[in-house]
Image 1 (cartoon, rainbow, N blue to C red):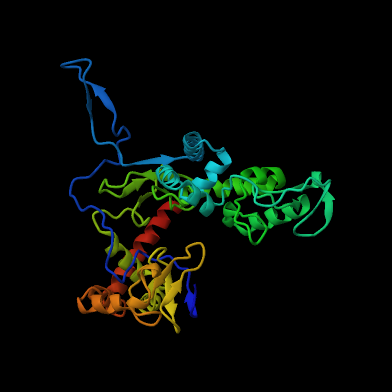
Image 2: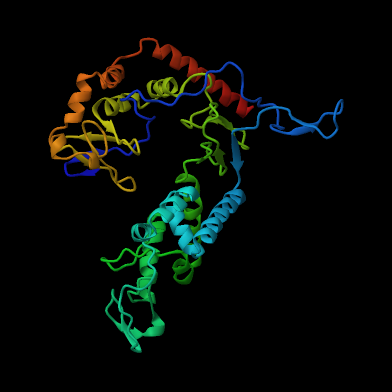
Amino acid sequence: MESEDDEIDYSLSVEDDFYSGDFSYCSDDADDYYSDEDNDYGLLEEDDDDDRNAVVSRRPQLSYTVLKEADIKQHQEDDISKVSTVLSISRVDAAILLRYYKWSVSKVHEEWFADEEEVRQSVGLLEGPVAQVSNARELTCGICFESLPCDNITSAACGHPFCFSCWRGYISTTINEGPGCLSLRCPDPSCNAAVGQDMIDKLATCEEKQKYSRYLLRSYIEDNKKTKWCPAPGCDYAVDFVVGGGNFDVSCICSHSFCWNCTEEAHRPVDCDTVAKWILKNSAESENMNWILANSKPCPKCKRPIEKNQGCMHMTCTPPCKFDFCWLCLSAWAEHGERTGGFYACNRYEAAKQEGVYDEAEKGKKWQRTPWRNTPIIMNAGQAINCQDKRRLQI
């Protein structure tokens, strides 16, 4: 956790906001949305008794689609093609735009047609070189400062010249550091020009190209609000979910059933809040987690727990989140200033506290410190069931 203060980022994944009491719940409707034993959801069949041409729906269609790797690639390529065609830009630029806007085609179109110049500046898509292009036979590399023939010099759309060797080192280091290579920029510190996959294909090794492609494919699922990976160990399938169906239970091709909302095992009709609390208490690390949840606050955007030990109220979450917020009210820092109390107070928080807005959060913290007397009995029962399951697998 980085901020204008000193704080600790535990980088742990916890269920959404125990503090505010704002949870998304699974539907508790008594009627099942679908049957796990049937594989023909949403199929249409002819009515043999009346009209041969009439079709009727046998049952509601599933609210999700399980995607294999080939399906993910096809969806990704289709989205890139849509943006490239509508905006009349290259596929490389279309991929950069989609990555920036978390693979939302509608968001790309909306922002682009609202203010193309602002989008280009934010994303790093330049319409032409910003550096002066020399007609000399030799150019000086901006990293190693060696004068080399123009054939050994290349640049991004900005025109800043760097030799092949320095480019390869720069690209190789970034790819090996992780998915951050998908947001690669020109090596010039003052330049924001994006470096697309065309430069990767031109300068990276085969192994590095494969890594980059894997990162790009995974980003389509991990950055997209409508898709998630199946949480089963070793499963490479993803799920495309239609939000608003009310039923969050998902059954993957690998036979693992889970809740889309919290990614825990399917637990309908129990809501995600109750399941999260039970898992926390049933965990071997429950005491550590209790301390973290009782003495920290979650980032309003990525939900990672943060402990603040000194300094002002302006917080900045660590990359890739980088969300700026107020420690007291957890609202965006852009909405704060001298009129809201400056750096060391928050009038919004005090007003909301007087109205009882944070009462549920305080109850949540008290709950974290309250032991469950019957937990050992229930835990022993759960452990016994797990042992039985393991024995069945061994047999």
